[in-house]
Length: 160
Image (tube, rainbow, N blue to C red; front, side):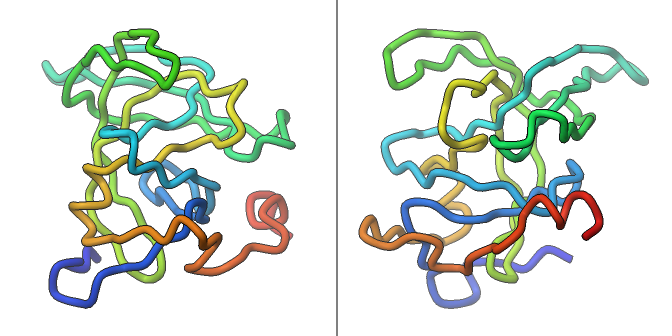
């Protein structure tokens, strides 16, 4: 069920948070909340485009927890766009863009995500400004995990 973020008080996020992307099979993913990034990005170590019913889709693989390279989530999503995106180092890359619900602190709203390899990055996901505006979220840069801490993320994936 999608809750309308605009009907309630602004959601306060710290500079890093645990989020969920339920339609992609990700009950937890640690994200950097980045007001300097317009677009949100999700780590995908492979991206395979395909067609179904005349529409473009991608299959992709995610290592949702940086310390667990053997934990792999495979997902599929419809492609809504392909965009040239600049990373923080100024490098431009063409990326697939998908739309999926984001869940955080009991709220849920659709966001756009670009798919890219973030293997060398500290965070598997970057939540950009566009997603924050859509979710009526505000950021406290001094705060961290303001929506709650997760003690054993690996156990949540492995059924523990």
